[in-house]
Image (cartoon, rainbow, N blue to C red; front, top):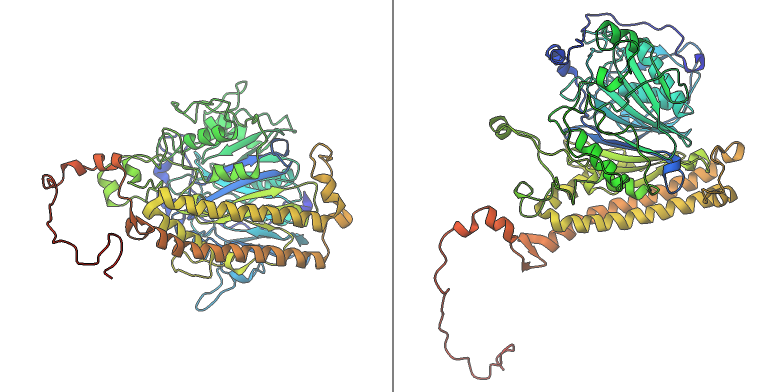
Length: 622
């Protein structure tokens, strides 16, 4: 729509273009140069649950920001703003390492230049709209003041493109698309349409590193959820995109691969997309009119790294969310075969806590359990470090779990239709790896975020940073994961339950009778949405909201920094509170302990003189 600013012409940047081949085998031969500008975030897992599938009737979208330990882990608040008529919005290159953004144009103080930093130059401009909404942002937009939430997962695609100023034409990265959706969209459908139109108009470029040149976003609002796929077109000047609505009562998962299959753009209730998807596929010999249009088979490059890099996560997440529905663990070709459905209807309603369990999973209890076997060490660490010289010499691969040590942050967005937007929309934010994190809630109506969550340089330890608190604990827990993680998760569960209680209490306190009557999903109007006094909280109430949730986050941080000392005291020198516990027998067998130096036969026999006069066993000399 014109109100979103997508019909006004804007300058495009010129330069050479990279034409992507439609042939799977040849595609990445032309992408060597693209790696030079690759963003740092890689291989994220996302989960979406519709209102009809959840225990409380909220929409949920979860995201893990899986980089290489260098991604910017900060959560910031982008303020709402009014803009003069005819003004232009800067578009910046998607630099995802710390600091991901250095500029003052969006009014985020954490992004202002400091020290010797200089503001980065934009790669282009687009027309600005009169008003932009407030939202939370990590690498991508998270949730805005209208309760529109987003979760991102990089995917492979058969076409690649370079950004403007770096040898290409494209202005839009997934980072920028998510920001624009947060700034301008009031519903998930509107966000999808906006991002698709922007990508078509200004060109789209993907990450371009090993994980692919395409992207997927899960988009939710209080009433519905959509899956959005986008990749560059062959010219590098536009984009191909599709979106499918997730049926209410269903959940879905995107693990770094497209999942949308047969597309019908005539079904406007379920599908949205660019018309060029058909013509380009036909021109490249990838599709014949009259046959099903399988978007994934046509435009995906499939899994990367190894055969089960994406599919195993999809299988695992579905098995946790819908355990009675048996899905195949193995397959031949995830790209060309519809091994898993687009979405599933869980037999039981999905809770926020279950979504967190999914995000923290290392495939425990399955035959792919990363906490088992010699590779996990004697104490069962699920972490498999980034490859080095050894992996260059020995070819192979590890199973890819949902939770990773190299995650900068993960989160679960909730959009709740029965509450005012300011308290109804919130993010449960977890710094560092999900398997060792504590999720902390932040409602979108807060006036500020706690500073501990808005700072964090992965290259410099900072004891005021929530990211470093969680990174510190997770790394320490690797010394004796099997035991230490029980203490870590016990603390996380306690604090997350306190946070959940706070969310409930504040919802009731600030929303009044409307919140009380809405707690029962059976009596709730699924299409009701707060308006007037219910749509926005007073400034006084927002101060109350802000103070309560900042205090809660500060308490979590304080408790988390207590954990390292607690763990050190309890497990120092391989002991348990000073008592030797040794190694597990199975591991001793595996590493050749029985083949070590021969023990002295019969042990040692030492002769002692008689006890001194007045000595009693267990006592002292009188």
